[in-house]
Every structure is written in C-alpha cells, then in structure tokens.
Image: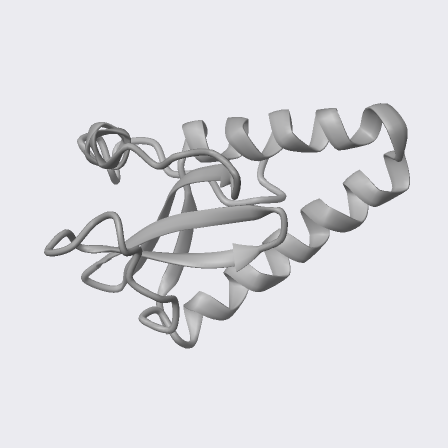
Length: 115
C-alpha cells in the first residue's frame, strides 16, 4: 500500500474552499471535506487511479474530481503526495504544480495529525 501525504499548501487550499462553502452551509462544508479525504484515501490502494490532467501532458501528475474541485497529486516511489486542490472552474497553471512539488517529502502531513 502507498502512503498518502497531504502537503501544507494542498491542505490550505482545501481549508479555504471549505471556509467559503461554510459561509452559507457549514454542514455541507464538513461533508465536502470528508468526501475529499475519503476519495483521496483510496489512492493508498490504487495510486494511479486518477486521470492524467489534460493541461499537463508529459508531467507526472494525476487528479481526482470531487465536485466542485480537482485534487492534483503525484506518485513517488510508495508515496502519494496531494499537491493542489482547486475549484473546477479555475484555470490550472501547470507551473503551480511544479512549484509545489519542489519540496515534496520535507514536511509531510496526514489528515488527523494536526491537519
């Protein structure tokens, strides 16, 4: 099984999206975050199950869709790093993924460990 690691920036992305949802529907925000964590957790068993984003041909990224968001990750050895969470209607800038991947493995966090 692979180890799932959420990067600090990705957790911050998810938190910011959930805060906006919570302004109108706090319960929906909690449900959304749980759904994202459940969807990401499946990557421990099937790390390459996400699709390759069309904006990143030739780059080692994959994504999960959890409406209204896209969750971007990359697999390195037996680790799955969640690097970016964004709203689906936003445009993806592949440079963002590359910037966030520079420090992978330096300070991993797992949900539930202070996340």
